Image (cartoon, rainbow, N blue to C red; front, side, top):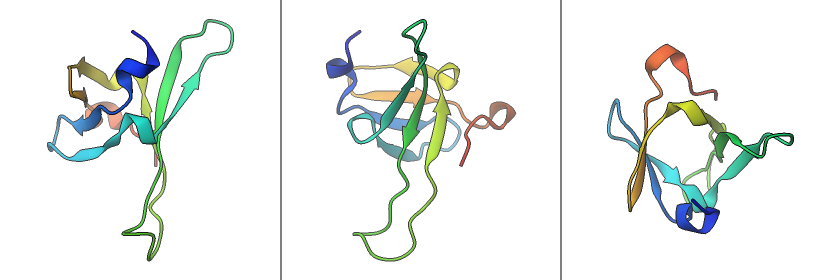
Length: 84
């Protein structure tokens, strides 16, 4: 699958159904030797640029449960996978 096919997909947390962000607004951590994706980094945002910025969220690639046509389902609760 190409990155252009990922762009624009919403990332949804399986545990609580929360919309975490869009893949097009995130960064990918790629293993330099293998070329595989290690994790997705969702930038922390503030409301309309005002107030305190939230911490970035790092989603390990193995936390992804399903990639659909419009969204990516991740499971973060299991073993405390997300890093803030």
